[in-house]
Amino acid sequence: MMPAHDSFYDVFSKGKKIKIQWPNGARLAVTLAGNLEAWTEIPDPKHRRTHHVGGSNPITAEDVRCKYDFRTASENDYGGRTGIWRILRILKKHGLQASFNVNGLAALRYPEAVKAVHAGGHEIVGHNYAEDVQSIYLTREQEREEIQSCVKIFQDLVGARPYGSLSSGMRHTEHTLGLLAEEGFLWHGDAVNDDAPYLVQAGDKTLVEVPYRNAISGLNDTGMYRRGITARDLFGAFKDEFDVLYEESAEEPKMLTLAMHCQMAFPATGKVYDESLKYAKSFSDVWFARRIDVVKWLLENCVPGR
Image (cartoon, rainbow, N blue to C red; front, side):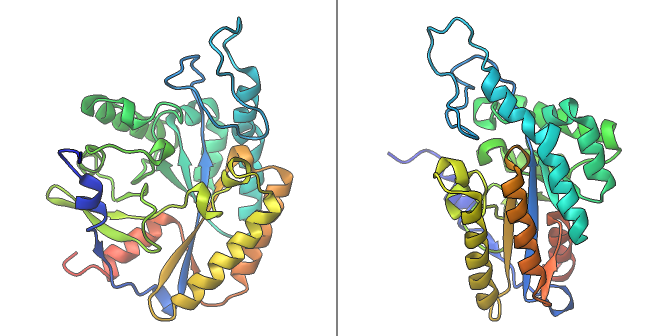
């Protein structure tokens, strides 16, 4: 039986396509998405992670004496303690800026890392408060309060608020777009149904939907472990996707996204990030941009009446 509302197909599938022209005649846009995430690690089955990150399976048994999962916490901590700095070094090496999806809790746990992200000119993107407490568990008012709280966390920490949002787990609700629009956000990024940004309606307001990549695509590094592939496989996926989108962009400009999770930015993964960026930079007609730059360019140059 179909639900009373069918908001994905009513809103996202029917989202208005944009006739895109990238700046300076660029053929393809490349956006880099860093992910600095944190988990509450509450020993509650509702919030418990069910997928491993780097080799261990989280505690799921109810009869263990120590329900706190130190092993999984250690894997989670790699991102804010180690991985973030590797990604920032690689981006600096290539002279590129990224958009970092940052949980509010990650900003509280790793304030120096978030300050470094901001100081490097990278975009900070709202990413819920914690990775393991997704919007689908929240009422409309709780979701509103969480959005407002996270905006305040970043404003207090770095003096700037986010204008884009990616939901934890990419799982938003039927209220999310409207709440983001009310709070002054310009873009939302949960959808994976297109290879280019498009427009979505949130009541009487319009947001830009900036499609992301999930683990299945191969350009999201979580797929390395959930699908049992290696970091080296990620480069092959990047090159294949880049080549196809570059070819197609001759007729209809597209956008490629590379997702880089800080908790998975191990040495081998970092080498693949580095090689992927080097490959993309070998093409002169590629525009590297933060997602907010893509959004502002589209609204100012490609959306009539703005």
